[in-house]
View 1 (tube, one colour):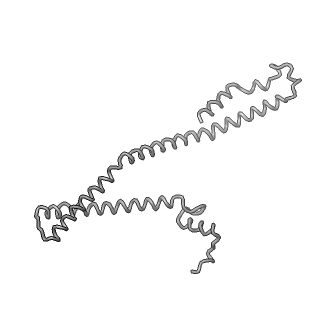
View 2 (cartoon, helix red, strand yellow; view 1 turned 30 degrees about the horizontal axis):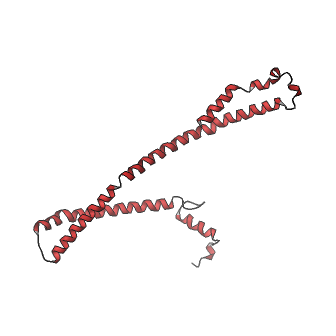
View 3 (cartoon, helix red, strand yellow; view 1 turned 90 degrees about the vertical axis):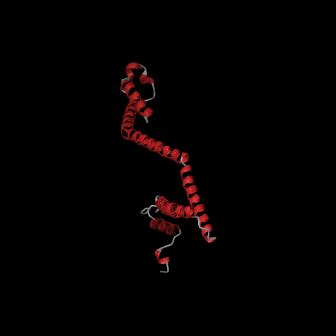
Length: 185
């Protein structure tokens, strides 16, 4: 966009007014079969239209392209962070597995009627509350991911309709030539 604007201004600086008085530069112009007056008038009108286009359309597009570029850079930094931070979910799952193994070991001790009071205290005071907290946390994360997945699935849904799952179903029926009268209920 900057190149187009720069070239448009350069063409303006050259000027097309000189073409209007071409006969002063070229004394034998009357022998040429081309009509330079109409060509220069057409050129002037085209340059004026291009200047208006550059100012109105391209100038706004340049701002929009800069905004898109900024958003793309932000998305890229988030993706880079996510790719570099994939160890966090792995550590959460590993911690959850360690808690599960400790609970399983407590279950085996209880099954065999073995009582080891320090381990029993650790289970009751530390591992069961940690397991409960992690369970509630994982349920919340799973619910959040589910909601995001549903919203993402419905984002472009609906065809030309309302942009909802109902619009998607109607679009499918329309493409298969199924009407409401075709339904039994």
